[in-house]
Length: 237
Image 1: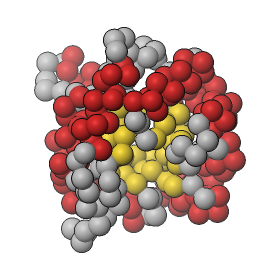
Image 2: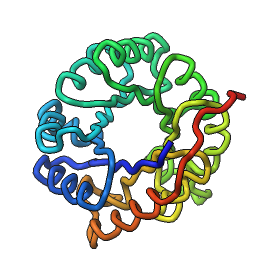
Image 3: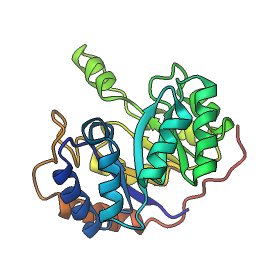
C-alpha cells in the first residue's frame, strides 16, 4: 500500500475547518478527517460541507462510536463520509453494527484502540470483528496526565510494531507525534500518516496551528509519498 497522509480537522469553526482543508489539499494531503471537535460543533453539517467542497476526497468521520453503532455510521455515510470510527472498548455488538452499516452503505470502518488495557489485543479484536483499519491511539489526556505526574509521556510508537504485526489491515499511529515521528510511521509498517495536534492543530485549543502550516504539510507529503510501498498483508501472530 502506498502511504497516505490524513489531516485531523480537530476544529470547532466550520469556515476555519474548510480553509484548513483547502490548504492541506494544496499541500498534497490525501484524506480529510472531520475531527471529533468539528462533529460536536457542527455535526452532519460539517461532514456535508466537507463533501460539497471536496468531491471525491476521502472523509473520515471521527465519531469515536461507543453505542448506537449502525445508526451513527449510517448518518455519516449519508452525509458524505467515506470512513467512520468505532472504539475498541465499545461492546463487540456495537463494533459489529458499525461494520454492518459500513457494508450496507459503502463506507470503511476504522477501529480505535484508545484506552485498551492491552493495545495489541484491542487491535486484533477490531480486525477480527471486521474493521478495515486500525487506529493505534494514545490519548491527549493520557499523555498529558502521565507527563504532569513526572513520568515519561507514552507514545504510539512504543507498541506500533507489535500492533502492526498483530493485524493484517492498515494501521495508523495517533497521539502527540513530532513531524519526524509521523513521517517515520511507514517504517514501522503503518502506511496511514496522521497529522493532527500539535502539528496541524494547536495543542491547547481547537484551532489551526500557527506558522506556515501549508509549507510544513507539503514537506511531509513529499517525504511520505516518496517512501514507496508498505506491505500491510501478513500472517497474523
